[in-house]
Image 1 (cartoon, helix red, strand yellow):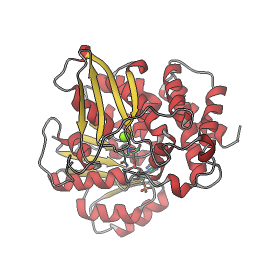
Image 2: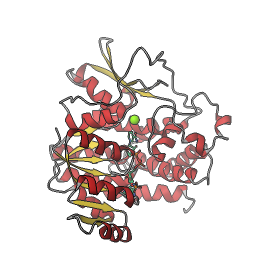
Image 3: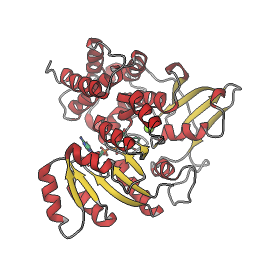
Length: 380
Ligand code: NDP
Ligand code: MG
């Protein structure tokens, strides 16, 4: 069980719930980071008394330093601040709950300092899976997934032999627009896309859930976490999100993990595994959850899922290009500058133009990420 944690992105949806878990379990917190929400990180710092906090820039850090003057807390900022938080000596585990590729370098920093990783930031594995997995192996650390589907698969794989696995089955809710035609999707609004039927999450992942890119990112995340080729990872739409994912074995047995829609459960497991600890989080009541249904994903209405499989097959820098283009397109959509269906169009265009570097280093990943963003922003 984790004894002391650093949380990268403590002011987000996962970060706040991680602090709730830490509070319940009595886990110490040595570092916290935010980008711009200094009011919330100030409050968190006053309660959890970390050694170090970090925010997006020097102006915010100066303001926060003033507010926390009486406390013995180092206030850092920018990438160096994130690295300081990721490598803080007191922490045995780093929870990576920054959104987007901004989480990549700090996660690598944590791994290089021998920290176990409770990984929420899926973009890290999507963009640089091969590098992250080999760094983790070289430093002998474990990466435990916070993402509910991957936490489910982790549990379904436990106590079974991996050579007996036929395939991984990731469940997807289908998002708020399940059943809509491509024509209907042209007209959907930002407000509608931000209304996820089952989960309450940050805005970027909520839009990713509406386009099904979230499931695409999760397929790539699963490829690196569990080392299965794309043809052995299947996606099934399960609108109730009660089964979080499954593993099918060669003898026809399918093992599933079920639970209520409460991210605190996988967050806690990532911090306690292999222990299971009693908590007061919401419980699944099978008698009240109704019928469980399953459908094929509709890749015509939701091309982002197909694009993710394509990027995974192309390998090398392609998933990073897809991810960078997606992050830029989602930002434009949230600002009302493009329509919902422009998201896959822009990603697809960036992927078509990109020529893959099959064995990229970290610098290559950062470079193609920037390139894809510019491409989507119309700057190239
Ligand atoms: P949020 O948007 O709620 O939170 C993001 C966090 O990252 C905030 O602390 C934010 O700070 C910080 N942040 C944002 N941009 C930057 C940046 N450029 N540099 C440094 N810090 C930054 O996201 P979620 O908590 O929803 O998601 C976090 C990650 O976890 C994502 O990768 C997501 O895919 C994954 N995930 C989330 C789930 C969920 O239920 N929310 C479920 C499964 C996975 P500030 O508040 O100051 O802006
Ligand atoms: Mg998920």
